[in-house]
Length: 203
Ligand code: GLN
Image (cartoon, rainbow, N blue to C red; front, side, top):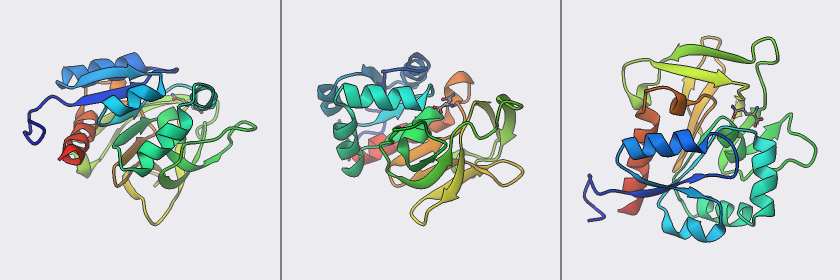
């Protein structure tokens, strides 16, 4: 079964805080067996994880308080596919600029990201992005107090940029991060892309 392209895959969504319900709904729409993850034991049941949007400093505190941070770092290092949106991208970044005092990230992506990079003047906005990795059709992207990728390390690849060149989607091995929130639009191509990685990793 595991090798069949249409076998249902079990994936988790980190459900400590943020818009995890939207991600669960999208993943289930795509046929995945998606479960909320709040405890370290739950990580052993899944082939991949989505880290949702929300507030990275809170997610960081809760993941450490619930004993999830270290097992998550190990899972990332072991090659588990993980897709982070917005606050989730911040959690996956090796370096976080404009973090709150004491804020840590899980790391894994060889990038530095700046939190709340668009300032209060432009808190939230929408735009269309060209993202060849997921298909020729442009993707409508929703940004909400979004981070940007300020520096791209050698190991990471940019998947999408704004017109001014600032990077808003990255990939590195089994990790994907987007500044924006595909879970709030009907464009499910990033979640499909993530599920393909999960299926490939299960092989
Ligand atoms: N500004 C939030 C943070 O720093 C991210 C916002 C979001 O996930 N929509 O975590």
